[in-house]
Image (tube, rainbow, N blue to C red; front, side):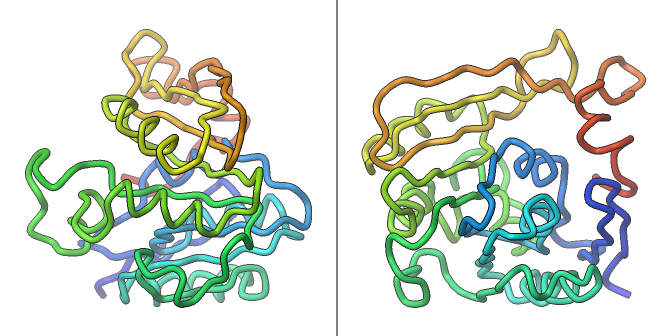
Length: 246
């Protein structure tokens, strides 16, 4: 088989994902719990992969209207299977399409929230995986930060929120791109592997047409010690983590 079936304690989900292609990581698990979806609100996930973020959001907010957009055909089909496997087919609408052409399949000013776990790295930054699926997910091969932000702005209603997870070393790029497109950074949280190590990820929330002023939240620490026992916060959110997560 070219797929694995993994159990995710957060949300009690079972996840089919590629055995050798792009597999979800902690990035996808952290993002939904940074967000604060409103009951009955509309959420669009850009670059949904096999569906972890959207399904966790559906578990957290069953009344939310969630749309997931994914360009890669195999990941899109796995997302379909995962929705059926977890009996969430009625909670998430899937679109197989190119985010750069978002106006061809979704209306403008239609979402309260947009979220994304996007490719972090520029094409010239680091080695690009020879696996096309991994390359698209990790490098800006099929979608740049600018294109992602423009799609989010197109979808969001006024005062709508855009949440994403990104690299700390690209914070300046991120803030400049958000502001250039009319999204004001309002909330940021760094993610650290251990209590005294530098951040490895950042979580950002920006508001369409928002006023200047950003809250820096306390870092999210993943592991409490070198034995990689989860921190109290991670245990509270995810239980004791997930099985078979890279």
